[in-house]
Image 1 (cartoon, rainbow, N blue to C red):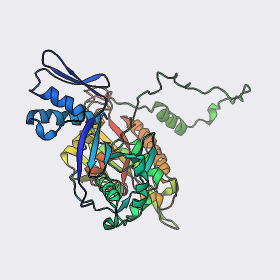
Image 2 (image 1 turned 90 degrees about the vertical axis):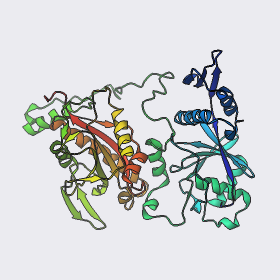
Image 3 (image 1 turned 90 degrees about the horizontal axis):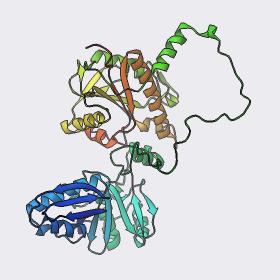
Image 4 (image 1 turned 180 degrees about the horizontal axis):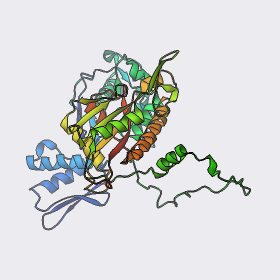
Length: 448
């Protein structure tokens, strides 16, 4: 790997260039215009044309044109309209990045020595696609290269690799496909299907389209909301009002009035209200020494009474708490402020704010739910990630009900960015990873 040489060249995909008679330049992706320059610098149109054709020599263009190309590269990556050709001494590979902010790595020897156990191949007509949940993207491998992976699946000695294995190992090491010889307990706790499902269904390293895309709207109508009766002979049971206690009526009132609301009041949430919400919904109520491990009890159910979930408050506006990120300790019921890079914190707030429908609905508090999955996988095999999602759902419903009782508005979010949360907290995603998000704030009906 240390002797390998590589040149990374960006290659736009599905991009069209239009040069108008007035000297303006327009760039479109999939027939949608993404950039227009009224007075293009000299040579820009030719440079873009050569770049789109894969013939551009970056070293030969001006500084101003290079700045345009660098900006356009970042835009194309966000639109998933760019690939990178990796020119090696004896071969060429194609790399497709997952991250919008990704850039070719500094080419140096990677301190890794075997293919990740989470890597997998998808067959195609002319090549294989190599993917891995924790890699920076995917690699298109020529069919003849696929057998080379077998030689890298176990711990290998770099000095004994032939030139093709060495070049492939070099690229894999630079793009996150290789791991070290000795894996931590946290790494061993994750199973293949759990890691793949987590990364594929969360923001961050997933390159898939996520969220409400209505991808089948033009193919077939939405399935019926209510399933048809499965027999023509229903059994009707009359309600007995004498069984309705006041406690049941109070519970019904909270359950039936529970709603997701993204509208919040001008007056921010208070730290007392936030603490009350978390204490009533997710704090530890009891612990017990079990046969194999310590068991915990909280207001919501959890598989095996393990309670692996942790709760973080991303505070944008809260009376009594400074703007910042806090961990809520479920045992002591205290908030612990974390030292977080401002850029990461602002990105977390910005992404949550984008889920609110109107500009005046300013984010107050985002609650991030994370999972210490090794706590579950130490006991459960094959179902650990499934259980943690079930537990997160139970916790979210409990947060909903307590928020409703406290006259707070709230909503669960369908998508979060685990990679961004990891960068903000410094947590290893194998040790602890975010799995759900919940926004809470005051009701606009409450007077200021």
